[in-house]
Length: 223
Image: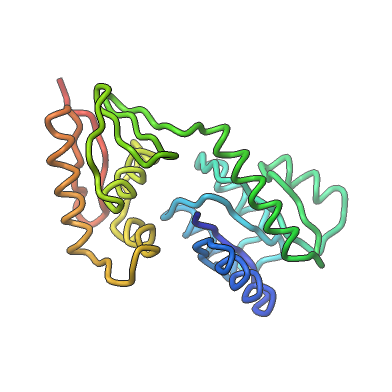
């Protein structure tokens, strides 16, 4: 599970990042609102932990922009603000939960697990696109009722492409998503995975387009 942590307090951010890593999450730590906005534009996350009082762009604006871009990852707001109006505003802008500082890390992790479970149940465990059925829970690709073999990395790349149909997925985003496997994933490896996926999908009428300088785009072949 990949988490975006948005927190400008160095000590608190380090403590949360360390705790979440130990709990098995892959954590990207953005130190201000601008970094968070860029990360949410370029990468896909399973959840976002968002402070409100941030430099450059405040947390409310980060939340507003991500929901305007149809980013559906659950958001837990962390803030020292205990004002009812702030809580209402955050929830109205699309936050899923609200935790006031100071807080205990086990409670944060419990709320994070609950939000991820809830979001996964809403999204469902499969993604369908043309003849493809990607079973996220069982890590299987089903085509016309039969299993199509994919390596774990190929599955992760295809999952990224399918969850962002109609949007270009950058190489950096794919590398970042695969970083949990090892530290040796680079541009050449990504090109190999894309080539393998492309060969499997083209006979099914689905193309993986290379958008020069930007990344890759999944698209049904024109009839």
